[in-house]
Amino acid sequence: MEHRFRDEDVTLPCGVTGETIEFDSADPVNYHEVISAGAGLVARRIDGKLFVPTGTAGSIGAGASHPAVVITPGSLGVAPSHLAHADALVRQGVAAFVIDPFGARAVTSTVANQTQYSFAASAYDVLAALRTLAARPEVDAARIGAQGHSRGGSAVVTAAMDRYAGAVVGEGLRLRAVYAAYPWCGQQFLRPSLGATTLRAIIGEHDDWCSPQQVQAHVHAMVLCGGDATFRLVAGAGHSFDRETPVEHIAEASVSPHAPTVYLDDDGAMIHPLTGRPDAALTDREVMRYAVKAGFGVRGARIGSSGDQPQVFREDMLGFWRTALAEG
Image (cartoon, rainbow, N blue to C red; front, side, top):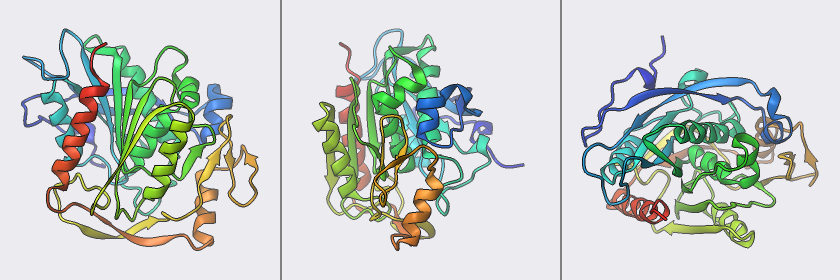
């Protein structure tokens, strides 16, 4: 029997124990299926652990209901670094909902194969978690954010798109803010409108999993669409520089950071880089296979931190959430 995050008893260093929550998500094959045919989606019940502050409120949260942040892991699943971020948020009075997209899908890692389930499903998970938290009495539904790392960073960016969010949760419910840590931005809406959601992306200049330039361009496009979005490039940092672990080489990693961007039409159809035409039938597998065949695929990439990089990340993260989740 596979080990599941939901089966762990997790108590953060701050003393708060996580409550396991199961919630309904879905397994769309692509973005078009969500936006244009959402009623026929294959259902998927996933889970996570909710950590709610106790005692005196911190510098962000106050009152009977707390602001909350959905924390979405990357290709290696839930890691100690994600729980450390949850602990930091809880100490500031913010509830943290660490979700596990892998366990219910019988996935242990997507490092070597990102197509085991779609990136559209990853973003759907985030919005399903938003809907779940908004119904909780201990959570302030108007102050729910999402923080994602790597593949999870891609998920929260897409979940921030007004077009995609509306298709999943309808009108009247949106993420207050999104913090995208070294996100993969290889798939982008042609018109990346954020609506009222605030977004910040952060990535290291030496990241060899994801393209810093692609992230920078994506954020710039959001700004041109009228969005409240900012970008930070961290000197000397690589992928997952928030981890308190030395830089190591992951030999089985399959990456293509320099592949062309796959744009998405308003109805969610992918636009193949070679044809320039939207195709509702295209999936991650087809466009990623194209990237590999075209010579953009690379085996092996680095992960980890050096020096004070985790502290730099933590300060930026908490600074963003203090502003983004402030009352009023």
